[in-house]
Amino acid sequence: MTTWHQDTESGPATGVTFEARGAGPVSAPCAGQVDFAGPFRSFGNMIILDCGRHYRFVLSGIGQLAVSSGQSVGKSASLGNMGASGGRLFVQLRSGSAIIDPRPYL
Image (cartoon, rainbow, N blue to C red; front, side, top):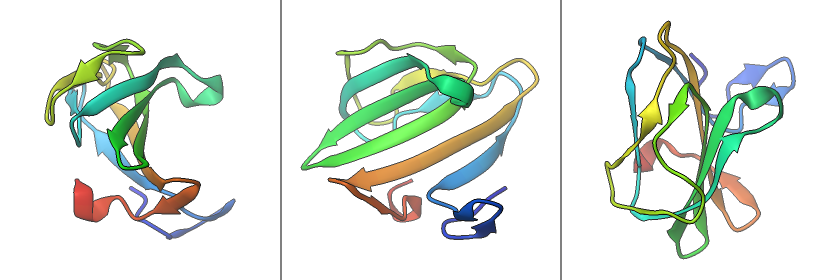
């Protein structure tokens, strides 16, 4: 739906937004530790996944979470599912304090 750096109402997109099918699975883009898993402001359920070497994926809009904060996960492990009617999955990649294009890593 939204690509990296696409112009939006609030400026260039800082991630990628996917239109997800109903109850579709959300998988870990890397092996790592879940720094945060839960509802966050207006973003719905959010996961922050520490991939090591100062890389963190932020995924939001998830309907049901299958992980909790502090849990270790493998690459492609189930993080949860989208809601029954689908929705928008937002994916952002951070390297330290910089936001970088996540597409090469997905």
